[in-house]
Image (cartoon, rainbow, N blue to C red; front, top):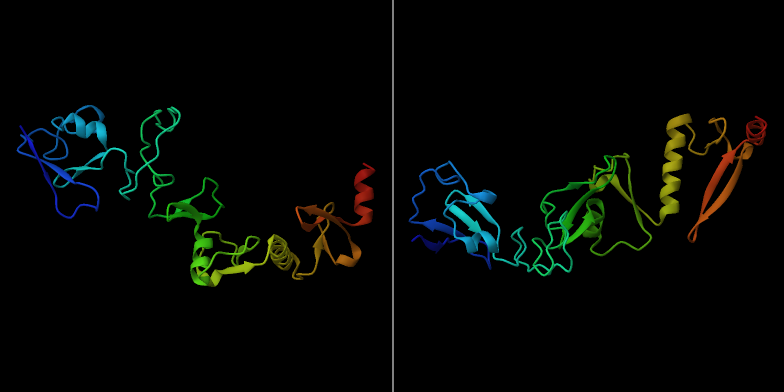
Length: 233
């Protein structure tokens, strides 16, 4: 009968196990070769296979106890209230991970949209990386309406020198509007006609307003002649 021994240096609150006294010839992970169902060693005790994640290591098998987060953080997981096959939940049994801990918590995560912000798990909470950097520098949370602007327009460049804190979304939109005008026509004060797509001074344009929440934004901007010409078509 094989015996189990603890391995020094394992994570606090966990036991790293290796299987001693087994005939390992032909077993995968130890001397290479076959595996049983589920990818575990063929001679691994059933209770180890059932109660937790088992990972092959250079010395044998590493075990995280049943009911604890499989990322190795040491936290207990919640009990699943419903069964969900897509998430591998079974009603009445512990979840495999604490929320967000299955997202490779020590690495930056890219959103599904290629132009979106980088995210990372800090203290068990999924946070935008640039927000965490600014709050860490300030030593306190950002104001509720504050927005962070990336100077070079690259949302993946979170160098502190590339980040500017705007007081609200309106000021952030103003920065982008002036940058776009400066890039397109060389004058940050110019505005773009919705119909003819040409840039012009605000005095020659009709600038409408719209409201979102408690903030007023510019609505459609156009030359009077361009709008009349468009609607005569």
